[in-house]
Amino acid sequence: MAQRMNPGLLGSAVLCFALTVAFAAGVFSKSSDLQRLRDGDPARPTADTVPKLLDTRTVMRREIEGMERDVLLRQKELERADVDLGRHLVYWKHTDQLGGIATPGNEAYNGKKLKEHRLAMARFSLEESGRRLEALKAEYLSEQRQSFPALDKAIASRNTELQVVNQKISEQDALFQKDRTALTEKLDALKAETDKFSKDQATERSRRLTRVTQLEDRIRQLLELDLKWLKEIETVGNILSVEDRTNRAIIDLGQSERAFPGLLFEVFTYDKGTYVEKGMLEVIEVKAGISVCRILSQKDRRMHPLAKDDRIGNPTFNPRRPKTFVVAGEFERYNKADIEAFIKRSGGIVQQKLGPGVDFLVAGGRSDREQASAREYQILGMKEDQLLKYVLPLFAPK
Image (cartoon, rainbow, N blue to C red; front, side, top):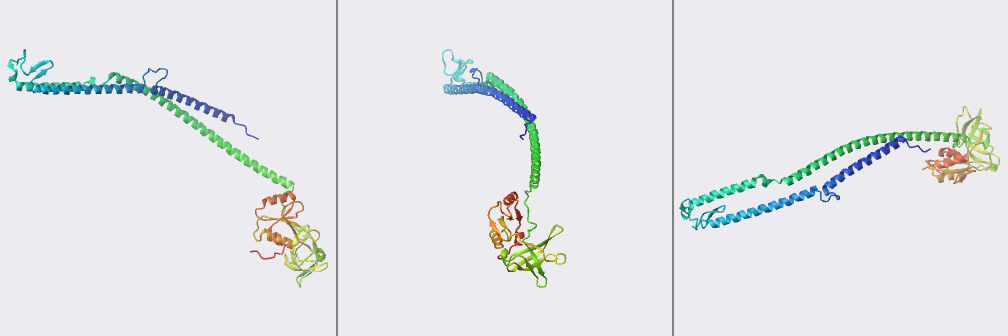
C-alpha cells in the first residue's frame, strides 16, 4: 500500500515556502529603494540623486580651479607690470602713483622730489609686495576658499540618507539571518524526521521481506517444492550369494538385464524401516541371468556384513527404463562434458533441459536457476561426488 503523506510534514513545507516568499519580497522592495536612490526615480526625473550631486560637486570644483588659475595668471601679469614699471621708478599703491617720473600734480613725495627717493621707493615696494603676499595667503587659506557649504550640505544629506538605508538593510539582513536560522533548524528537524521515517520504512520493508521469504518457504514446504537430494536409491536387484573367501558376490542381474562389466552397485538393506548402506560391488563377469561382482567395500563387516537377499541399486542404471539426467553448473573434479560421458557409459540418458521425464539433476556451483526448476518438476538432485560414486570414470581428474 502507498504511504499517506504526513499532514504535519505538508504544513511545514508550506510554511517554509511562505516565509521564503515573504523574505524575498522584502529584499526585493529594499533593493528597489536603493536602486531609485542610486539611479533615479522615473516618476521624479528632477529629483536629486547621489550621482547627480557628485557630478555637480565635480563641475563646481573644476570651475573653482579654473578661477584660481585665472587669478594666479592675473597676479603674475600684475607682478610683471610692476617689474616693468619699476625699471622707470614708477610705483603704485592701489590707484595712487607713489613714485616715478615727475608728472603734473605728482612731482614730489613727502616733500621731496621723486628722483631723490629711489631707496625709499624700493623699500616701500618690498613692503608693499610683502603685504600683498600676506593678503593673498590669508585669502587663499580662508574658510570661504576651502569649503563649499551648499555642496557639503547636499552630500551630508545624502550620506545621512545612505546611513538610514544601510541601517534598514542591516536590520533586514539581521531578520533574514534570523529567518534563515529558523528555517535551517526546521529543515534539519524535517530531515531528521524524514531519515527516521526512511529508516522505519526500511526496517518495516526488511521485516516484511523476511516474512514473505518465510511464507514462501512455508508454501514451498506445504507444496513440497523444496529440491530433494538423493538419499536412498531404489532396488534394481538382489544378492544371491556371498563368498567371503574369494571376496565375490553373485547378483540376479545378467545379460538380459543389460548388465556389463564395470557397472557399480550399492548394497543396502532396511533395518526396522531405516535405510542402511552396507557396501559397494563392481560387476566383473556377466552371464545369462546372473553376474559375478567384486566386493569393493563394506561399511561395517561385523554389524552389517554383506549377505544373501541384500538389495542392490545404482541411480544411473535401471534394467526396465534407463534413468534420465540433466547436468548443470560448475564442478570441481570434472567438467560438464566428462560427467555427461560418465553417465552415458553407466547406462543413463543425458538431456540439456529440465522438464517432465527427467529423473535427476546433477547440480554444481551456480546452478540456482536449474535447482529452482527442479523443485517445480519434483526432480531429485545429486552432487558431483555423489554421482561419481555410481559411475566408472574414463580417466582420473586433472
